[in-house]
Every structure is written in structure tokens, then in C-alpha cells.
Image (tube, rainbow, N blue to C red; front, side, top):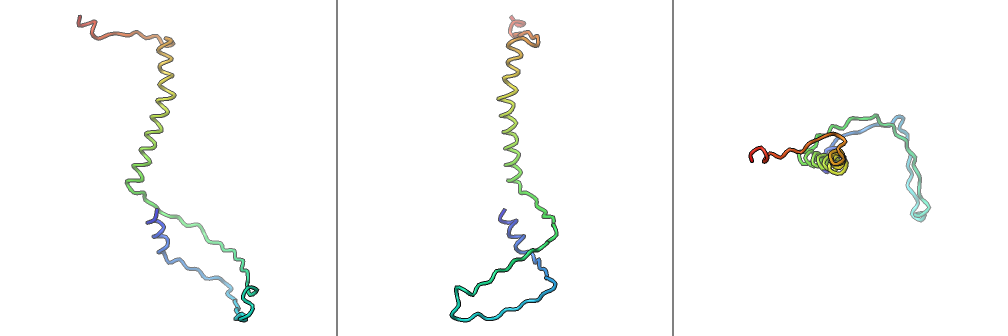
Length: 103
């Protein structure tokens, strides 16, 4: 993320305000706390696309989180459901031992 911010900060985006009319007068020396002004400015800047290509580490982190989330879902929701189906014989199943064939 810091590299993205550095790239954006290095861009030379400038704009000109039209009409540009400004006045400024030097404040008196003795009116320091009272010599303030407020400026209100509304700027309309068109939307721009920011192209960003994530690094390998960011993609790997995102994919690892997706794998972990999928595993947690399967382990806590699907696996107990499958055990319930086979334990209560909702789907008829038979246990076959491969060692009985040999003996």
C-alpha cells in the first residue's frame, strides 16, 4: 500500500480555477488572533481509474484466507450433515471391510 500512495503522490495533477480573482491584504501587526479568514471551496474533479496490480504476497494471503474459510464451512456444516445422514441411515449404506475378502 505505501508504494501505491507514493505513486499517486508522485503524479503531477494540476488544475486551474476559472475565473481566478483573488485579493490579499497584509494584516496589521497587532490583530493576530482576530485576523483570520474562512475559505469555502467546492471542487468537482472527474472520476479517474486507479490501476493496481497486487503483489504475489497479497494474492497468496487472500487465497489462503479463502481456503481456510472454505475448510471451516465444510468442517462445521457439511461434515456433521454427512455424518447424520450415514449414522441414521437416511441414505441406505452398507459397511464393507476389505479384510473379510482376504480371510
